[in-house]
Length: 433
Image (cartoon, rainbow, N blue to C red; front, side, top):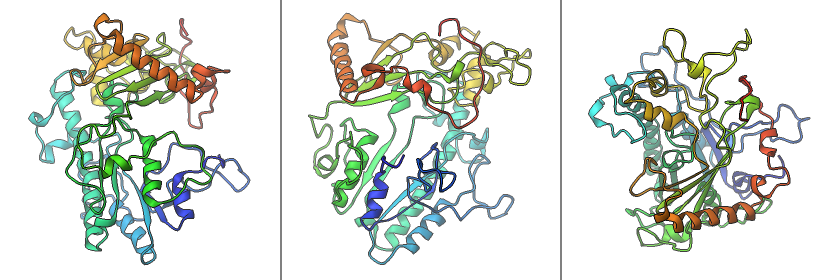
């Protein structure tokens, strides 16, 4: 809506050349016409630079797997830079759609990778199927990194790299069961690397808990621009941390970061979500599953829209084949997901199936240093009661401060009423809704 001014607009209003390639701010409903006054016409990441594409079937096509998109991010970045006025400050958003699924299965085999290179997280079974899926994921990460590397080399070649702040991160955890679309460590802890050779001491590993909400105030402070016209920002600038010479914990007053989830996809009866709120300190993660009676990965069976009949439980047909769109649709379709579900009766696999798909306790507490895979729930453990109370109180205090409807009301279910602009699956009405 027009009252929500993104920081990219503020940069542009202050003379910055702004643009993006690949995926900008989305999913998001943008204006369909001039008459649609509630929504902006242009992507909130800036002007689109997506003209340059690869051509399918071209012998010179360098793409390393069939799941990789056609957008030539590097060439689009070059065009962006060439349209920049001499000496003009710039902001560019590189939104690679890789490593978003789908992946070409077994693409790792022709890309110089081997199964022994994989570290399988503890919430997934260590099998060749899982390892292969993770290597296919790695192929697409390599592709995204290769375009970033070329962009950095380009900046270096024109003498701008030393004077450019580069922020590299991801928008969610890896698209595997119990990672993406969850508040567990593998769902919310993403890579973050920041470089500014002219202004930030390099070669440091910083352990302060930081969040995406901290990025906008950091950029605006470094640009010397006030957030005029913007709604109040909940994040804190990281400039003091980035300019420090220290490693480890730099700012001891910044104790927590907060995460939340409502809907990920249309995965339950009447498009209900799975509301979660979470708080992470430097050592612990506390999760509040506000509707523990719901299935966290989505309903275990859907309805066939054409026939109106309920599809098989867990999406497994009479031949034992799993169909990802039939069940647990908050988990991206993948060989890993299908492997867990097709083998859920196997005693060696069933615990991993439960970790991904079974209902969860209302409160969860994990010691991340000892248990990054979040396997040992310490909530209710007397030995950790002080930690649990501290984090729970900090979370509730933050939810009250920000007016979170789930806590502050007056309509605690308002998130369930928001319109979904895409298609919606249908599910049977649950007994314990």
